[in-house]
Amino acid sequence: MLEIQNLSKSFFMRPVLKDLSLRAKDGEIVGIVGANGAGKTTLLRTLARISACDSGDAFLDGNSLIKGSHKNRENVLFISHHPNLYPVLTGEENLRLTARLYGHPKSADEITEALERVGLSRYRWDPIRNYSRGMLQRLGLAKTIIVPWKLLLLDEPTTGLDEDGSQLLENFLHRWQEEDRSMMIVSHDMSWLKRYCTVIYSLSDGVLNKESQS
Amino acid sequence: MFTALLKKDLLIELRSKEIVISMASFGVSVILLYSFSFNESPKTFSIFASGLLWMVFLFISVLGLHRSFSLEKEFDAIGLVLSAPVNRSLIFLSKWVSGFLFLLMAQIIIVPLFWLFLALDIPSQIGLWLLVFIMADLGIAAVGSLVAGITLRARMSEVLLPILLFPLVSPLLIAAVKSTDALMVGLPFEEWKVWGAIIFTFVIAFSVTGVLIFDYVSEE
Picture 1 (cartoon, chains in turn green, purple):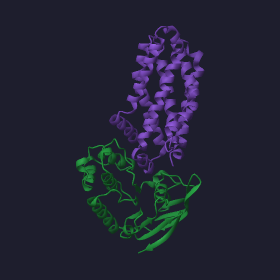
Picture 2 (picture 1 turned 90 degrees about the vertical axis):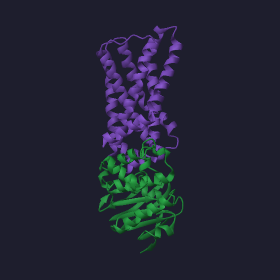
Picture 3 (picture 1 turned 120 degrees about the vertical axis):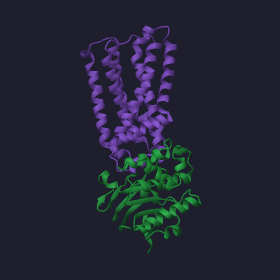
Picture 4 (picture 1 turned 120 degrees about the horizontal axis):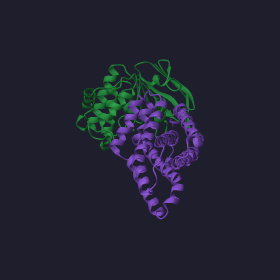
């Protein structure tokens, strides 16, 4: 279960997240919708501990993600709209590094298989600075194959994807829905979120409001 | 995990070749300038040699540190390491060791040329001389990695890095210059051991500080 308790964050005295609280059961897919600059990405970056918060905490199965040990984050995977990967390394090297950082080293065959599943096996030896935006998004999806996660934080996952890429993402999301995986998805597109999320919140002026629940 | 992070830094440098080459080429250019400026009076130069040499090392360190941390900013790559279940002290340690190795590699190119072009005498206590270099390099890399980590998220990190680094690293550089000077004129260890102790203390103080606070300084 994911529980966010009174999370606050400000940038240069400007509050971005104001005392946010949220509770999501295992298997729930939480959607966060909001305008540009509403703080959606900041919320995910804070949960992933890339950003520090001013106060509050978040818990996954009772373990603090923010104030607790780094080990508490081993089941949390953050896929940003930024690649969060090293541009001079190849797709394969980036995935191998990701797997090692999460404590699950993978063999070359397992990495190749993950790259094949996202349609990037042909480009596995290319430095990712040569990848297009859509290819980088696919590589982000490959991370979800090689890292065993319990909570997936997805930030604007459709950005830059072509038709095939969007279909690939949909296939992944449908499978995760069927498997009752827990996710938090951030998007500005409410209608897209409604297709996958069990509960949707809007984030506006740093405050979360429940929009819909199925 | 430390090995994975260190291997990542070394692999990135092996691929990009941006750090050591820029450090070495800058260092060699400055040495050439020294060589043409002082070629009439090598005796006079030997008085200032250690100070000028460590000045070169300070500047190439800033170049290397800035490049090393800029590579973490491209594609927001640092986000991968920060969001992973990694003890952030290990991120500091890997940056410290890789920074030290890059500085050492650049020095391997620069130092022989410095001695060759400026016709300096080779110090008799070569073992101690190497030890001073290694310890001072470790100190520069420790404080440099900590400061570069602090300035990583700043918009003008390339300006902030030297502004914060130069004053912090000054005691270490003074001690390194004094120790190198003493070794070049062949003074016994007893006469300059206080400078050696300052270098040693500096390395311990900043490496421990880095390990303890990198968790906080690396976040946005």
